Image 1 (tube, rainbow, N blue to C red):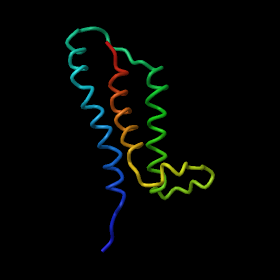
Image 2 (cartoon, rainbow, N blue to C red):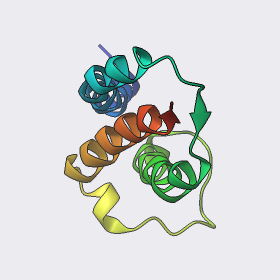
Image 3 (cartoon, helix red, strand yellow):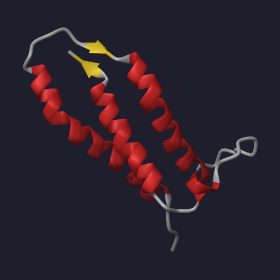
Image 4 (tube, one colour):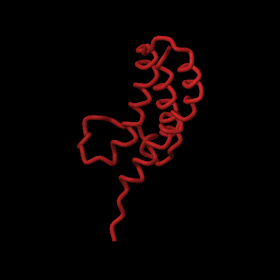
Length: 102
């Protein structure tokens, strides 16, 4: 019997992002009711969401079959504690919806 680790890793990455989105939805609904023009805050997206996405990409990279010998991955991402990945996922989900402004 073979154990597939990739579905477990993907769940551990996607679930915190969904939680971050769900945390931001009530305020987004209140902003939708204001009937203003939509904008996207690129500065917040680049300053907060892109580094969070990078942390998530670093945490998933050891499980991919892509050779990353040239990239030095910090040992904290490979130790197996999902705290950093969870926080980065929640921040990414929340920030993505927070960048949508009215």
